[in-house]
Amino acid sequence: MHAAAVVVGLALRDMRSRWRVMAALGVMVALTVGMVVLLDGYVNSTEVRFRHAQSALVVQQQGTVGEFAGSRIPASVGEMLRAEGYDPVAEVHAVAGTSGADAVMIAGVDPDRYRQLDPYRLVSGRHLRAGETQRTAIVGTLLADRRGLRPGDVLRLRGRDFAIVGVFELGIYLDDAAIVPIGDAQTLLGWGSDVSVYVVPEGGALADGTLLDGGLAVATRGDIALVGEWEPMIALLVASVRLLALGAVAVLVIALWRLAWLHRIDLGVLRLLGFGRRVVAAFLGVQAAVLVATAAFLGGAGAVFIAPYLARTSLAVATMPVVDGTVLWRAAAVGAAVLAAAVATSVLAVQRRSVGDLIHRDD
Image (cartoon, rainbow, N blue to C red; front, side):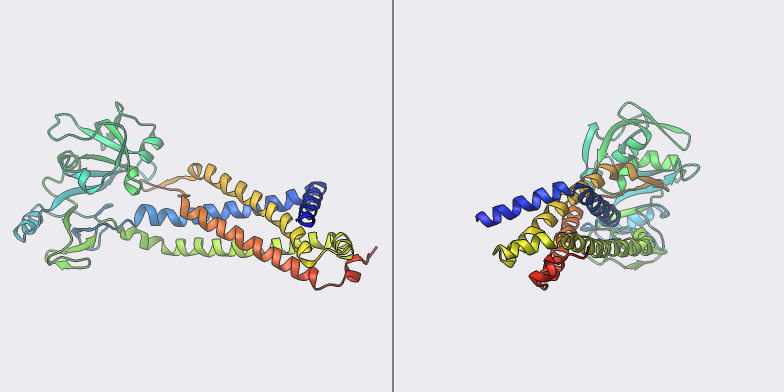
């Protein structure tokens, strides 16, 4: 125990005396971990926001992403579903705006039933109410933050003003949307009684992938097919994360080995004094553990701090890294792998050398 305490003290004092080298290595590790967290956060955002399949189905126009935009089907489809024993809920989904910069996603819903389908958290204000004479809307947190909106403000959609009565958070792509009563959405778009999708429960004759007459298709609600178009980018990000992790291991292994070689005389003296090989491993392990743990924490914390500032909006949807517990645990695993590989390589290289080799000076 005494020997271990002595070695730990020596390792920490040595780090202090070589603080410039340690700082340079720490910056490298922190930047690598930060980039791993951010890139993994982008990958995670597609899984969290655009892949949240629910135990419900949507009937939509074939070849469209009805829950996002593009689908338009007549009210007669709802009558057909009711005749087959379903209780369909109609929704309108569209994107309004004159350009990608000012585009707003619109969701027209039944004020009496939509909270059962999307149990969001009301951040401020109140819910929509059926039968209101004025045009009202609730907006997602991302849209509210981007436009600086809050309850009592007015949101202009296709030349018409909607009074914002609430701000909600759902944790999916609808946080970028303005939710309005379905009648107001149909009037705004000039659709008459047409809708985008009908939501029905699972079971019965309908299933994911079923094709219906009239160019209709059935899909799992919440599994937005839009993600498929992003697969090449997602694959590139995943590959980038893995390459960065491998690069961090390789560079830190070389750096720590060089640091260990600078200590070769000290390590040789320790072994001459009777300290075992485990003490040598502890000397190197303490330095590597302190360096990697501190740098990884700073890199992860920095990524969490700057992630919200990296949001970019394209076609009414903001893309940004979603750094949650899963991402941070994966980053911690990368840090642990870097630490284990670096320490194992350095210890093995030092222990394979004799005491004579360690205390021999080249200068």
